[in-house]
Length: 609
Ligand SMILES: Nc1ncnc2c1ncn2[C@@H]1O[C@H](COP(=O)(O)OP(=O)(O)OP(=O)(O)O)[C@@H](O)[C@H]1O
Image (cartoon, rainbow, N blue to C red; front, side, top):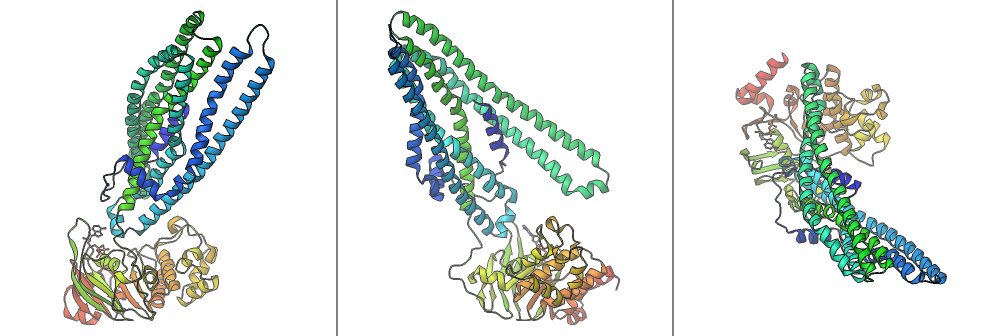
């Protein structure tokens, strides 16, 4: 086993999380079925394989040229009384040519292998990422997102490590072992038996050590996970840590996790370090025994000097496949496991799928009808019960209700991030499940509470609403929303970098960007989840102005956290425990003195009006 062993094992095993994310059904595939299925998904792996294999065979066969040449030169060329110089010259030239040819074959084989496997892996990554993206919010939230991402990064890397090295090494090593043994047997069957006798115990011991190494690396992975968890918690919760002055306790926890990882890593490395000297030791014993026994056989005239020396060369060829065998098997196991996990992701059905021949919604304000809609999150109780409501085109509707009453769930169903458990939702009379995604995502847009901002300029982030929007169009949009003065007040105007996740902007400003984005997208139905975080009075005014601008002329459904939004709406839908319990204009509901009146009273007292 080479020094690279530790690196390969370490990288492959550490780069992956072992999580079996709940919800994904592990299909019961055998290793062979997994490989067959994997190859079907990435046909590039097989492209040009016969030629690559032929090159591998040539590269392997070339390795026996040197021992054969040495044997020939000693036994035939150096024959007394006068060495046959011409024969030696020809043998050496032939050998040099063969070595060059072998090297060239090896190089071409590697290039072809890397090209085809990278293409195959790119296809697999692409398919898996697209599938993860297409999985409904429902699946994504019931999965551990990290585990999903790890499957399409870490697990594909596992496959890559095997395909680019292990897969071919199995063939090369097996070929090398057979060829070396056959040639050794031709030179001396007695010495061949001796060599095998030395190595048989090693072939028993190495898999055991390999299993110990695997277990040790499982522990390293667990400890690495602890370190990551401790560090990321500290980073994410940095403000709380500082606010409560608990830095020492956190530092202690990180130190403990790092120390545990160091111990686990050292133990694993010790085991890895053990395998190499062990094979070296057995090899040295084998060589020594072959020399002693070979000389005796030579004295008896059973073996020539050339054959004995060539035999010693062949032992080296014989050892290297054994040194790599356990490593290859380990990588093969990892690759099959990785493939299995990626295939599991691809097997997870897209519950919210783009319909074939989907309907394109015509332009113009959208009407919405919920018909007996019920919804439950997987494994959870029903959170929406038999909702049947109609939203008129062009109307402004405010949704209110206590926390957990089902407002966001209603919005997620309306934007088809998930489908109802039963019942249906009609937009302009068409079942939402029949509307083409391309039309749905253009006509119905949601402005979430925390619109995700990417690390780029303000203009880049607004342009996400419509990718082909020009700078002038963005400027006009801000103008029309009455927030051009705000954009101009930022250090570099529209070119101001917003930082990762928009951290350079305040929560209210981030929502301004989200509103501008939606305005640029120009949808016909706008869903707005108002930010609950407190904003400064100036931003509050800007937000109100921008909201007014963005909802004008469209059907607008707002999850209202502000009194003003509910007051300004044509109608208010009041949610309670997953049902719509009241509906009507603000003044009417207030006068009725029901749930809405109660909510309004607590709002009013909270803001001091
Ligand atoms: N991803 C989820 N998985 C399981 N249950 C969920 C999930 N999201 C919401 N719920 C549950 O569904 C119910 C309704 O939640 P929803 O988010 O729709 O309420 P909400 O009225 O929007 O609340 P808030 O005003 O706090 O945002 C709650 O009981 C909540 O715990």
